[in-house]
Image (cartoon, rainbow, N blue to C red; front, top):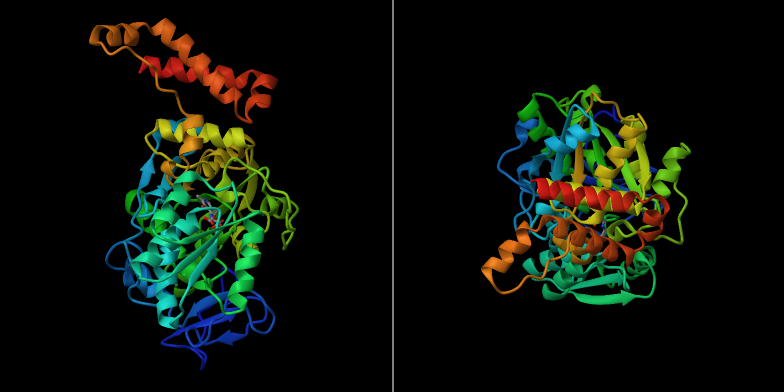
Amino acid sequence: MSLELSAPPQSEPACADDGVWLECIDCGEQFAPFEEIHYTCADCDGLLEVRYADPPTFEAFEGSGVWRYNAALPFKRGVTLPEGDTPLHEVPRLREEIGVDSLRIKHEGMNPTGAFKDRGMTVGVAVAKELGVGRLACASTGNTSAALAAYGARGDMETLVLLPKGKVAAGKIAQASLHDARILEVDGNFDSCLDIVQELAGRGEVYLLNSLNPFRLEGQKTIGFEILEEHYEEYGEYPDRIVLPVGNAGNTAALYKAFRELVASGALEESEVPTLTGVQAEGAAPMVEAVRNNRDEIQRWDDVETRATAIRIGNPVNAPKALPGIYNTGGTAVAVSDDEITAAQRQLAETGVGVEPASAASVAGLRKLRASGEISADESVVCLTTGHLLKDPDEAFNAGGDPEPVPNDTDAVLEHINDSNETVAGRVAQQFSKVADSSAVPAIIGGGLGLAYLGYRVLRSDDA
Ligand code: F0G
């Protein structure tokens, strides 16, 4: 089974353990899954994939959450909190405004630690236990560290996380800290944290649970199974397209793997596979650069910056698995600005769906590709939102409205509520002064659009 969508099932090699083995996506070398620790190929350093003798069918799935899909996982059950079974929200107002046939939001922020990472960790920590390793570790822009800390705690294992100093949202550090991970702040970006943790893992000091670890992606594959099943149940068909934020490109690789396995078993036609569409922030967009130039490899960006700190990544290690996923499903990739991300975060919040900035990139990307005509009006689309609003309270506060001070008196409160003119003017001024403190100010001064938008928001919320 190569990375082609049409690859047939493989026969089980001698090194397999109960129909499961590891295989290099570059040279095809095969390894026993649980005898020694492998992150990349011992021969050529290529990325490894978990392979199965029996690819899954929909009939094999039973139960709920990630472990419903154990027919497609290396174990029957893992260290669980439990995870998965996240909502597929309807957002009619947003759908109409963006202009697609159907739009659903798969809100992965509703997992136990508030991000999709839990799906990977329930499997990854189970594998760590099977291998009998001691200390678990990861580099992280925040969410992986929160999930590793929680699942490590649940599995009664020691955890160590390396974070880029000053670039991790408060909610995520709070989680890692309270779940008792040892937090090491590196004076560098995520990519340098990952370089270090890979070296520590290579020296046998830690067991690495970044998405470079092929078992993590097995758990994340279940996002793909869930979307297909839920969408089919509600619409009688699979979505045309899945739009998702891209950082290390693990999810893109994992969704594609889910689809390949279903195609291999005959459960899914090739023509039914959703088109994978990746979205990055403009300040950290090496995958978009590769896709837009039709390249098979990414070039590492050394300087990355975005308000969506979760995807502030310049060297997406899973690109060799994710790029074929985008190309072979007829997908694309697009970069969005921080202001477009914040606008999408607000719009999702106004429908009751609270997400962190990186998550909103998917909706911002859909909007942009719809406006450019690259996505057509007759498509059914699922946007993946990867993390919860509370992960990044500072950005949520910057994007949202301010509390209004009122006197400690009912009549005065009522007078304040009814004094709509003053409220509109005051709130617009407050919003503007808050945004003026942020990096959004050049865009607002440039076009005046931001202020117009804030005014529109306040007027609309006053209408409601
Ligand atoms: N969205 C959120 C909220 C994330 O935390 C991440 C990655 C992504 C999207 C990108 O996903 O790597 O599969 O393409 N966060 C990692 C972390 C890097 O350390 O928490 P990807």
